[in-house]
Image (cartoon, rainbow, N blue to C red; front, side, top):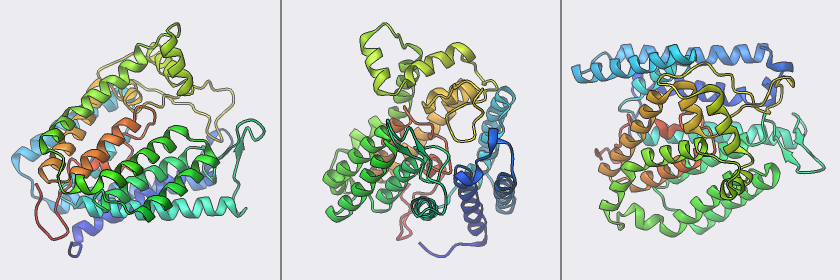
Length: 384
């Protein structure tokens, strides 16, 4: 893959600092009464702004952009800025710096970096929680014991492991050996036993089994390439399905009621959020309140777990369309680059995002960058 140049070193420094700041912010170290700012949260915030600043420096250093590139980024910035004026949340405006700075960088390097940093942090936090160095808070210990494993919410560790699995599978080009499968599935079972994260466990097990059985066929392109063109429509189809699943929820319908129960009330909460906040083109300010440690007890729970619905409500329909187009572009690049295993990985992320809010979360999900990354192979051949 060759050595990193100075510009790439800047990007990976920013990317590593960013992941560390976001993931550490979700640990028990950052928990304070009523989520009041503390010294640790201030340091993490400064780390994030450092990463954004380094990305901006890389963009300025690269310097050369075609006219079409400039026009495209100006258009995207304009649309995201309109979402900012609606939501008053600058997160996605700042995320755009990573997309511009990351253009052309190898997806393998991005994924490998994310996997190692996430794995190290997850191992340290979980290890410290299980050896008593930091608190392992347990929710409802006598009813449905769910360990937080050193994080501020019980599913955080399991979801981080879910994306580490996908990153590992990507680096293995979709091929898993039986020994790898057994070890990875065993860890997945442990997270399920400790956190009772049902959807994460189930989908992780399905993904591991799928790639164990079909990985070599997918990597060699033995499944008809024409079939993969159906993946281009997957982001839009799954996104529309996810939104309609919540907006059309009817508690009097037996099927809906059963599904809502299986999803721990997610459909009801999503439908309620649509009624409370409405659907707009460019979003509106929303403070999402969950059950994480440190949340003020007097605030009403309103958290929407569905990525598509959460993005649409807070940032607006236009921003959701941008995200869907970004994933469609990623699928197209994966197909032309003959990375058919990446098409499947993206499909699983799209499905997972129906019940989890990680569709556009760079710290957990580096695959959201795939639409702007290089599909260059390790041998240095372009796969685009």
